[in-house]
Length: 135
Image (cartoon, rainbow, N blue to C red):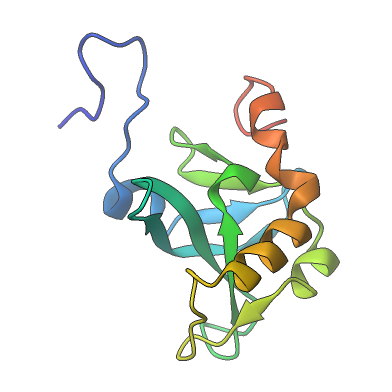
């Protein structure tokens, strides 16, 4: 099954479950940051708002979850990975949550904290180089 519109040049539509959820996330240094656990859609705008990244822990135990703005990552469908321009220490200090205790993602205070933390990365998507996963 092709995910591409036959009238468009290239694949620009991806299936969330088959392509994004479960994908590894790396940074520009190609360090493994975790994997995408879920995708959050803002139903007011019908746009992807966040991906939920799991990071840390061992074999899924003790890992922390992060809501990363969709605009802060570059998804490379051919490699089935996402690139997040952040180092591991900054990610460790990002606002996060436990697997069983999700925040209210519609809360404006939550959105502001997330936006502020990733503000250096949020504009980077449009500046990405077109060579694979590099920016």
